[in-house]
Length: 512
Image 1 (cartoon, one colour):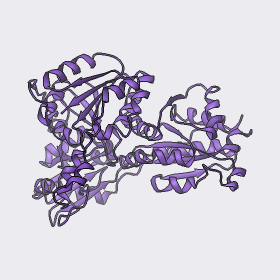
Image 2 (cartoon, one colour):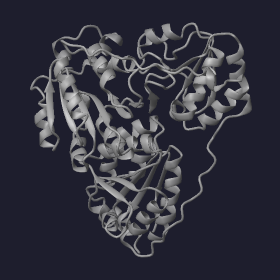
Image 3 (cartoon, rainbow, N blue to C red):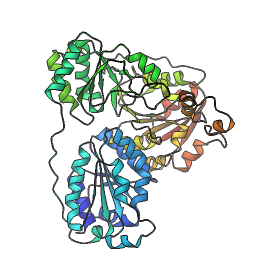
Image 4 (cartoon, rainbow, N blue to C red):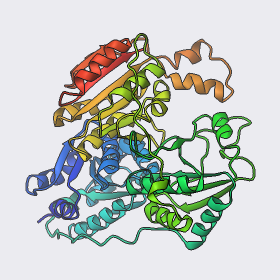
């Protein structure tokens, strides 16, 4: 058995059964091993940042890591944008990066680079396998790292892949997940019982399942406001689920919302900060004198922390509030932020997954869909655009049988439009809404926010996408995905009712 085959067999034995790949010459022995090893689903993508984004979406829905197969340093560099987003979301990921054969490196071939140097800033664990006999053990350790909500990058030199002597390594036992200490629980309990205004901010796995329900009990028992950051990795919401307050994006609005709180308790997230720095505005979103009690860090055991808090404050199941179903009337007339949100609220199917990179157009969608049918909502934790379409692709693979709705601005969609091809190739049930306002509208908002004044002719030209106009129907068709263009509420309602019942991918160009 060569090193590459031992790698694939070790991954499959450790429960890693999905690989998003854009391989090159150095990775051909890994590709060859896929023909000899059952149990690994290999999914071809047309750009490496689609692979890394899809692995992020896969983790968020499957709660286990996928592998990415990337070609040398440039291939890894292409994928770094969505590795950044995944790391901010605490999504585990295992990157397999091909490298030149060890004896070829000294010749500085065209694709040679410092792969470890490229990987290290956005990886939590980096290792280059030093021989075919070591690959299995290295792979087993990489899986353990990725399963701990970490980015693991394993570099595979060509000769270690093709040489014989590979050995399959047994899956390693997971280490204990970092939890909390009693002092942090005691401080949080004192805050919750103080009678002073307290906000309980939850993130990570604490905003879904049993943990979310327990957080609701604590808030209901103590009168604390249960909140999330403006962006969350995956939140379970809709009718029948515990509602949360979303901290506003804009600094002034966020400061106004949090100004009266004396205590902030955080579970699997950090204290709120502004997305960007703005002149004469603070970075920390809290009032002067507010005490922050960090109970559980991102990636920690939020469920255990919440169970300890609930027991300490005497919270019961009956204390938790639950969201009622909102029967939203379908609007007519022009499409805008509010009418689009009302349409989504009425038509999101039960158990759907919404991947949100709608930026400006979707600003109202989250709040106005709180009473929709129960669903999951995934957001961009890292802010690097080109997130939505790949994450929707990976989410559909990680949660088969569930409808995925991808909300994307037109500028964002153009970063990773290649995702549509993989959706078509794999027959994924992804409905993509592209909001075509023909501009980087968020930049127009931020232009004033950072104090840059009013944009002139040259500055305005840098924020428009209408010269020439983007034809998303033609682009989607060229990638194998059928499309529909809509320009008013009636057309969007009809299109969604039709395509949400159909299998496979579809794109709706929402012209604004």
